[in-house]
Image (cartoon, rainbow, N blue to C red):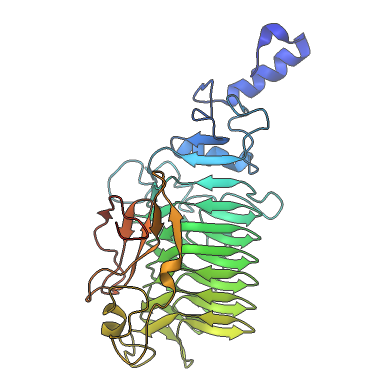
Length: 381
């Protein structure tokens, strides 16, 4: 993009300064010409904070289409345990004096672009900022789209004060799809395994396995959700809070929850804790739950495991998972793939994400081994 021989002297100085930021020296940041800048390592991910609109990286938009780039995509799994010793400590690149990763996006400069994980995982995310708000991989997300991204690894630990989630602390008017978190999250208020606080946003085909803890508005998947929707999602997270806690969502306001479930231990002081800790003006459609801490609440675990298809009516006193097979996506081969996979009659439903089944079949907070899907279409062929 910066061709010195075409520029006057004043521009040469500016171009040199910007080029110096391009640490990897790439001449093309969008090799597949899809308008998304490729992120190859943690340094690239860290540089995203300077271009939250997705238009450039390291001061360059070389290779972007004429209309400009609109976001980012991962090209590989990224691991915050950079020295691979199984411990998060000062030897790791983003230790930051024990505070760990600095979230992407702030209220004054929110992340507003498309972020596509392309089915890759960010491993061992570590954040310890107990006095800070809007804590997660992303801090503040607004008018954005995050998809196909997993947060996993034995060392995942995210701690903040208010609006805390492994994926994002606070999102508004955004979409999150086919994404998940498998790690520890804690916050004082509005803490969720995936997202802390969501307003006006659509959450589709996501899950979290926890554990999640805090004082109030604590949920296995989301802490607080209003004026949006959560669909085809689940949580088997262990949830612990003083009040307003739910297996899936801690608190909903004018929100729609559909075709989703929670199946994990939930403790919320003296309050009853189910799928949603507290709901005001919200709809809960075709969704089920069990609090495995008490075992007597909601449905029984064996009852939720029993169905092997959507709308199965021979596994207890009610028809379960009716209409869940309508949630599907088109894969790269052009096949329509159902998000929900019901497994056998001893497993909870799992999600088909980026060609793999993600399932915690016995609700123990650990996902089962992923199984590669081959030509799995909506018709089962």
